[in-house]
Length: 230
Image 1 (cartoon, rainbow, N blue to C red):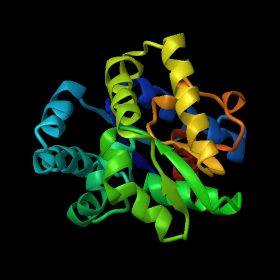
Image 2 (cartoon, one colour):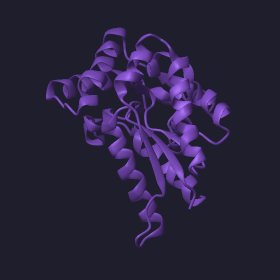
Image 3 (cartoon, rainbow, N blue to C red):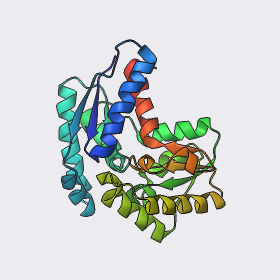
């Protein structure tokens, strides 16, 4: 089994899910008492968010690179960034560390392609929705992406950091998410990407009339495939 390094704490809430999904996935493939051989470097998210709010992605890249190199030196053969937004630096990180960074958007694009969905709605932080580091991976597979209106993007961004990232799940927020999703479906989205690893804590497939793509789950499966050589 290949060893992987998980960059966590971004946020810790979804890092818990990654650890569970990856261990469960390895066990489903290999059975018995086989579980994931992995390492976790968990950041204080306040430090990361301060950089991101200041648009200082170079400082974030330096922090993530240092952590990844520690894990590489300890035997990690690939890195998993346990958050969508952090993939803004994924390509630069991979160049800096010399081992694969398993990309969440590439894994998600592959899953959408399998479902033969050609137009999707994307929910996530403002960085994920508005920049091209995620959408470009989908467009390479001819998948059209639509995003919510500006007020709805601001609401989603706020709840990710001030509610979901703290483990706070509010029914009124869930209802607004559903309303935003329904608007995207009305605009032609044949699937919805839960493009922040905390959103699946609030929104489930049964809340949505079209296929939901849980990026944390999809990303974790890609990590498992790497680990066991599929």
